[in-house]
Image 1: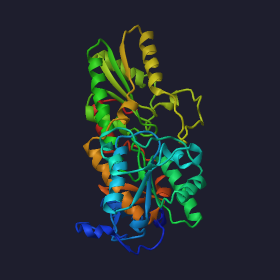
Image 2: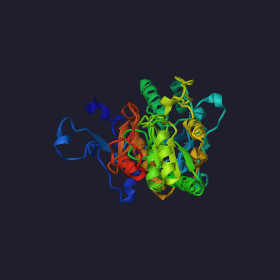
Image 3: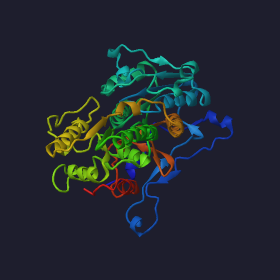
Image 4: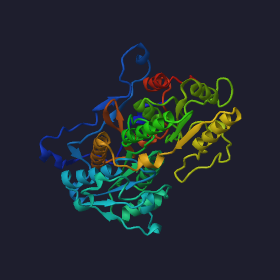
Length: 430
């Protein structure tokens, strides 16, 4: 159960320095008491219980750090996502051009680059370095998975005179950022640690839409359309597409709804039966018998209850539980099922996971990347730490990392999104 304290953002100290943004004259400064309600709906079912709120993100008229003496650094961690270079560029632009910060560093290859054992030198970012990176996919700084001891990171921050560290990554990255912030506070150091959430799966709490998600949908639905054409143009054609979604089905659901071609969407939030009268294979068999083609979309974390759990308990370098490959599993089970019934099928299996996350961001994600990056800079210059930028009701907010990583966002199967998917596919409600 949440309390008001769960939404209080840590601050290094009082803000006594006038922001250099006052010279821009068109800046709409905000106060910390400007907040966005967590529950924005009105009605008897929403009125009971406490009404929590989060700080609204934006520039403050008085800031904590003296911009003339500040060094900021940005690190990108975990898997790729469209928009990473946009975030890097906007962090640099806001710091260098608007706050007139003299030194901005780029950390190479994720948290690894904050350990002296890596031998990696930091990038001294300049306008020439960031000029065209927003047109490229991936991250020019490189990325990696896996933690570095927070005391090692803080030692590096001290050695390099880094005052603000911007941590761009998913829940594992944000957990690491929280430990770094806690270690810096334990030592009594004025180091601001600010997170920018990056998850192509769109599964971080208090982030309605993460940057890169809409680009992923755009590319994924193109793959679905191709798989649909392949299925329709072959006798008993089946298109089987595995999309990203380790623990949440947002990409699978969103792409299926965007394409309007999918007949089955399998997501981690809904366990489904494989065999039997009401199982997936029986439903697929009925679809082929009546329509002669089918398109199946499966999120990578779906159906794990059906697979042998050889990797139970194993995790990757970011601490994520390793899943079995449900796409390959379904491909073989579908072939077996129809082979036993003497039915020839033409099955095409596609796994575009790494393609859809490595492309440049589309316009909507470019805008979101820019906004989140600039709000992170405003927060860092105001001395806020152990927090990340979130989004609620089309507003950007400050979220304490400890609260954001306490749970994972999941697709609500009673939501309008999933209801629309069910109406579009016509699949059984397993």
